[in-house]
Length: 402
Image (cartoon, rainbow, N blue to C red):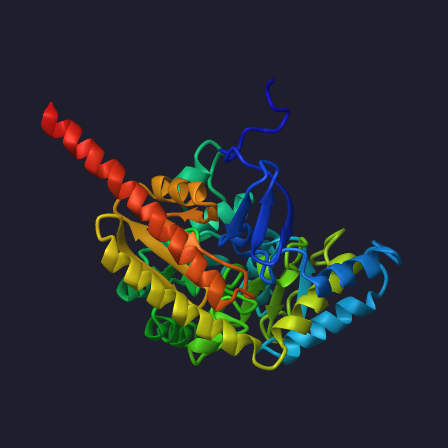
């Protein structure tokens, strides 16, 4: 029977009925180690007791009232985000794409409000991914996402990843902002060097531009800091957050300084569901855990351990793994074989990974993983690599025989 779902996903032939910590339990009766975390979403794993309690407690009281009324838990979550970042204000949305839409509008509105409405263009970087709306696919600039959707939304200029001279050349009188992911996720777990990030801050200051960080995938502890910008020594003017902040519940946020947000006045932006009581309860519960003393330090330690183990794996299987990339628990391996082959081999070993650009497999475990979980994942990856090597040897023998 043909599925009634719109066929926009090539879904793997497996489904899950429950999860516990870093484990997923399939309807096929198998147990899978989840090192994809729903594409960096399930920051605290599956069915975390504190998140379950927060959601069920709130669900028994109030789900939705709209932003026409005060939402105290939203005020609390916004205050906690402000107190732990560079930001002065927060706008809550339902997703990362919506958070990026808010950031784009905010950057344009800032210049309009300060007397320069001609400054609306935003410079982004090749390989970027900022969402699937018409504006955010234009911001990302990737042809495969733009094709067939009519004229590209005006106002976005891409420059090569890491090319400072190209960036300088692209800045013009209509430029409003620079927008970047500290680590490109969909683009292949490509880490932006701190020196380049600091150069962006200098250029933004020099030209009166806003600096936007898309931390949808890197944020909420993923790199070992609450947000990845903390590694760089500078702060952005606007930052977008989603994925991990909801721990699996749909939640996004756009954070900004008072200066950058000054154009976003009464009625300039809105959302029906953003900041609803259910999302706010879960977001606060996520921060309860992530902001516990020692939690982020442990993420950093587990990230270093995983990077070491992946490097050892690469040494043992150079015909399969070409490069190890990333920071904290946002890691990727660029493979010698098609990354889909690598991911499929891992799934056969009951290990979940996520694909990315540049022939990379992303390794994005929940932030609550243990040393034992990492050891188990590496054993399964070792077996996956061995299976691929056996396939390659078989193909080589067949070729020689022919």
